[in-house]
Image (cartoon, rainbow, N blue to C red):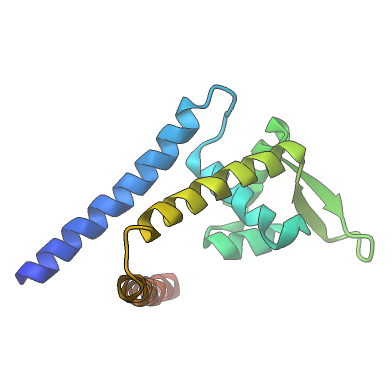
Length: 154
């Protein structure tokens, strides 16, 4: 592996770990929050599209996790008071998951965390650096998306 590849690998691994650790510690340090980082990401998924409601299938697809895993996690979040299930008015077989007021509050806190992180990074960069960073991350995401599809096809 050349020097650039080694440095890039090191930075990517450290960055991924740091983001997860900061998110986890932020949740742990909050006295009134009883959520794991996985549960927080479920809340984030449910809250997308102005909390208009998502089916279990929608959430599973958004997060690339299995239906049974989402069902179990959503039921747990219901017991904790963060989400609720609402039957469709048009088709009683369809159930939508929406955020409760508590879930909306936690989603806003999580979004604020990400906005603060992005603003903090962006203020240190020139316009050229911002463009290069976004292009690089788009390419990185495309690589991982292709890998994920290939793994799911196996």
